[in-house]
Length: 517
Image (cartoon, rainbow, N blue to C red; front, top):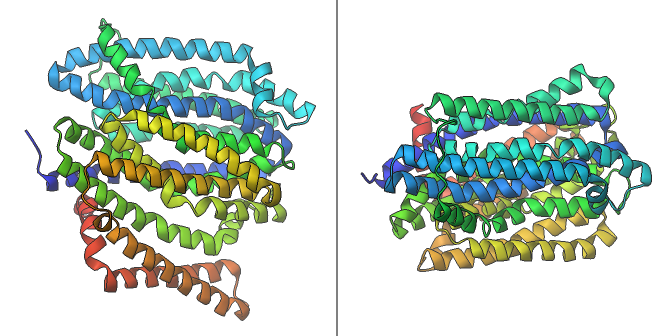
């Protein structure tokens, strides 16, 4: 039975609230983890070596996870509609066996090949740092097996709309790392290695137990359908493009940063994590919440419904990200000092990280758009465009890095990523407009345009408030809080007076179930 559009938005709002609250809990743990790490290691060379050693398995899993889940969810929903629940589970078991075995072989092979893999990524390191990085990577590559096994388990929970269980699982990783940092400090940089491995194992076990309780039978006979397997991988491979845009460029950034001064890799990582926080907290949750629903609309060929969701997502994305860009631009130094500056993380590290954070943050809207865009292309099964644009983004980011890092250093690398995201997002917008048969661009951007004007007004008010009260001898953190509150008041006042109808209905639909709860 088809749902009404209002019912769909109510369910999306409910899912979004669940994801938001659980992601908030996970991100609180993530901030605590970053604080403890910064106090313990600062931007030391050993942390640079760890970041590069971890980057290979992390990016590998992120690429595979995004592509496989994006291909699996609409396919599993289709199996449930065409066949039956037990038949769909049998096909899912077959894919689970194939992917688990593949990731296990890749992990073992990567461990043996670490002396050759790590120097490719950390080619700018000194000999001692390379030796440490190889030893770290020999262990960290087993995250490929643990996290790879969990990929389709995540996909099953997402397809079944089990959002609570899906977003509780990542908390095990941050909690485990914090525990090792606090209770096993004698392990040095290896506290991070064992923290990641232990936390990922706990996450995997939790996902398995949750699915078993929900009725999924792991030990029943799988159904190996050659056609279904080919369809799955033919859908998954092109979808790597979306993941290349959102995840691969950070690896390119870190690898190229190994040619800069010591600590540059860690500076990039701290700035990227802080910039990534609002995306992980809200935008990624939104894209996951809408994915099952737009997959169903795509199967029903409901282009009108897809266009409506897409337009509202653009408004909602602008409403959330643009004021964050203003606040971080105004108060990046205060944010970094509050979160990270303690222990080994000194004044110079805080200043450099704040400058890098601003350069990343300018592209926050475009970064968030890549997740929303990827959800729509995945639901429409138009993965080839994602793949080609993803490859283009890597080449473009690499070239811009070479151009900007020479005279801006690590900040140039971050700014290069922002410019790449802006150009690629523009291309995707044109492609998706054609896929959804959107009649005109003006109506699509009227709402985001008004929000952009409100954000610019907000920045101007915040800047003059900060500068005007800066000479009053007020503590920096108190000045930042006061100026930020005045800027936010200006933002909402502008929207209320000028663009009330453009954003209120969208935010109201998305948040309808939130208010009822």
